[in-house]
Every structure is written in structure tokens, then in C-alpha cells.
Amino acid sequence: MDRIEQILASTPIFKKLSPEDRVRLVPHARVRDYAKGERIFAEGSPSDRFYAIASGRVKVFKMTPAGKAPVAQDFSPVLQGQPGAASGR
Image (cartoon, rainbow, N blue to C red):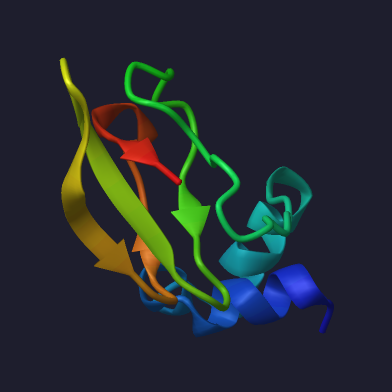
């Protein structure tokens, strides 16, 4: 089993799929590593993908006219979607 298959099998929403269905998703999935503080997506970005956090943490901030608001959400390894709804850093 390759890394993408392992991540899909351990992510709550995808592990409910059959192994055959997860294998069908593999060609469409990408693994990407981000450095601490690196922006993953920004408010207003197209909501065209899901993010599965395999390790580490992601903090999501809501932009205000004055700048960043306090952390709106702090995520650890789970599936995340709708990236256009907030700004992640």
C-alpha cells in the first residue's frame, strides 16, 4: 500500500469506502508537505479540493478589514474541505 492509500485508509471519511473505491481515488490525490507558517489557501480561493491533514496542525484564520482575527479553528489530522470559506496559514 503506498502513502496515498495509507492516508485515505486512515482518514475518517475515506476509510468508510471499500478498498477498491479508495484505490480508484489514488490517481486523483496528491500528497503535499507544507512548512510551518506557509499559506495553504486564502479566503476567496476556489473551493475545488479537499485537504486531508495526515500529520501536524493547521490553523485557520478569518480575515477582517483590520487583518487576521484570532484563530477561527485549529485542525489536526482529519479531512477538511471548502477552502474558500477561510484563510489558512
